[in-house]
Image 1 (cartoon, helix red, strand yellow):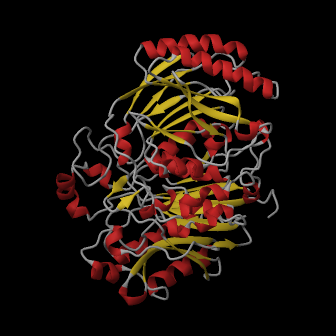
Image 2: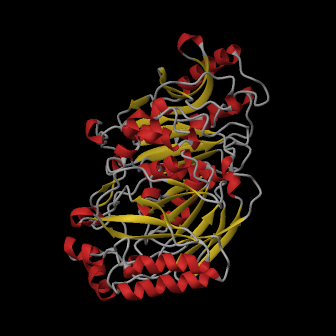
Image 3: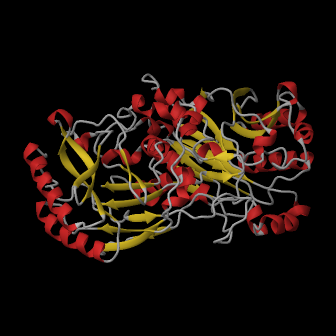
Length: 573
């Protein structure tokens, strides 16, 4: 689709209750209000027909909709009257009295153009709704190529990734969530990591029957205010920047003017093709049955002291202060220390075999000062067959304990041969994985670490885009529920942080160490000040073993692995 074509897209947020007729009235009301802004696309929240709260499977079926029923006929009529494309999500009646959570795309003529069932169900949805049996469509329209997904499908990376790989320029996300994590983390990252636009519509108002709010709050320990939709519907650009956002608690229509053709440009700032660098053959575990994959080993370590080291410059001369700071960090109790990417190389020179030999000397010097701790950094490195690679190394007193060559090699590291496997190390206090370079912008890379049972990711990197440091990397920690230490050595300031995991994580279970604050996956952060040479933090490796965000919903084992085959296909583009 040609660049430069302006399209106005909108999202409407509103409350939905147990009265189906009133809910239809709300849909028609916000559709009419949206029409006043003259958008060409309107996205509505998830479950517009009824609260996601059911007394029984029969009750769920009774309040669900028929494709040719009056409710959806009036929704189609609203699209026709306003002359816009409309994405509506509802529970839909299916065969054998089953139901699905389904997004529907209507044309300005009121025609049904696309149907997409939800792939990842959360909590009690698993008791009443059936999962998608096939990946969703990408619908070619005169305004843009559109893809649809709903709520939990965007908390993990696979569903939006597949739609983007199929050519979607605008992803329409219908949300039913009380968690601010979605608006602050997952929604913008899904846009940026795929370089597409995302239009996300969330709810306001109670997400459970209003008359049961106080009772459910008392039983679950969740304050009543967190049983309401969190709002903050938004439009996000391919760079991860929020173009329009709604309030957290008011009925509202937000809109933005976008150029869908901009989503066809997948280039990174260094000129690399984001999708062209993908390594589908490496991603095969993502499409394998999790029952065949090992569970994360339980770690006894609930408190792991770590340190982040920032250096004023990147050059061979940086080794000397790095050694000083390593000794300081270890002396102050750190068991893991992370340095920036390629900290002791010349940033203006193309590394050679000579640089790799100097890196060996640097590694030997680090091994002499690290004591019982381990130090992570990245270096030019001679891999198997004496190929020059860019590798993240974990160094102990005996030298290199784990080497992870960069898997996705772009223009910035064009001198390096790519690695072909994920390497991890099981330490007495953590199961550690490392990533560096362009690997940090690939959600598949972090998913592979998690599937290997990694509880702690060490990431020396140089950010190229703002979204990497604003949301990208700690979203990786959130969606995989792993600890992370990331040290940014790039020109963009910030982005050096440690993300640890809460012990209390699964909602609707007793919490012992914190009060419920609405955040499901967002990890607590220790962010280094830009002028701090050494910053200490504490991680919690033992807490990574629990991936259950809600009863019946495991972030790792509950992903739509059976529909992920397009992610590992060489011809997915």
